[in-house]
Length: 298
Image (cartoon, rainbow, N blue to C red; front, side, top):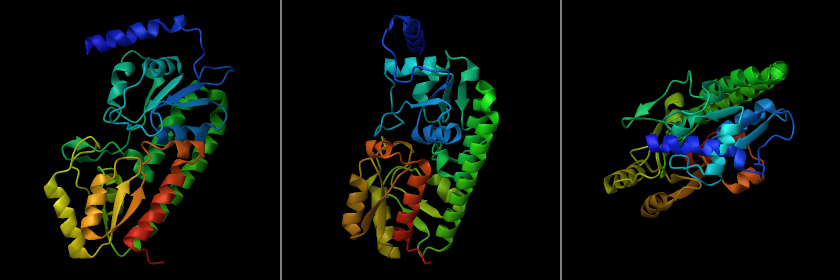
């Protein structure tokens, strides 16, 4: 641990030796913001519009649980006016970097969020719940005002508008789960949607015990899901976009169930970035797939 911290400090001291400009170097007077995962990137963009430079550290398609930043990313974080991350329970790789940053530059967006503990671990996917997303937006907003007070009113108005959109998302989830035939999400990926299950009082089952896709499901857990599908007549297995879908495919093959993707938004594809899709776009895509897979009655 001490070696890693020493290494990071040395890297920081070498910044002046780099003559090339980093992608997010300022060529204007805008604040420079670095975010770890896509929801934080999008929340920040929704609040700031074109008033700041916002960078996303996590490359498209890369799993946030096991990500390791390259020296270039560490430099970007060091040079930023704000470094925005989810919490110590997700971006473990960031902890050593945070240790050598000024505390007023580091924004833990899980502050004031009620965390779910399951399988003896904290569920890190807090942004799935729209109410949590509102809290995260407020945490980002408060920090932005501190570094850029001149745009305080602009940020506050945008944050208020965006939280209203998050409330619309909340209402859509309420309508969805009040009007579906099946009240269980059978998910062939790792445990991503626990906050959705908790908030809207639905059952959510996954063969994985932990929150990381690096863990492996047991054959017994897979068999239990197969029995559940056969006993309930539920004909859809959801799988996680981007992450390997082999487990979901095995379950679907054994039960003749159909497969539908859901996106946890923690890591996104290149096409989502290229097409400028947002957190809300992804959540509404999930809602349409849940309607199809759970039997929504309008």
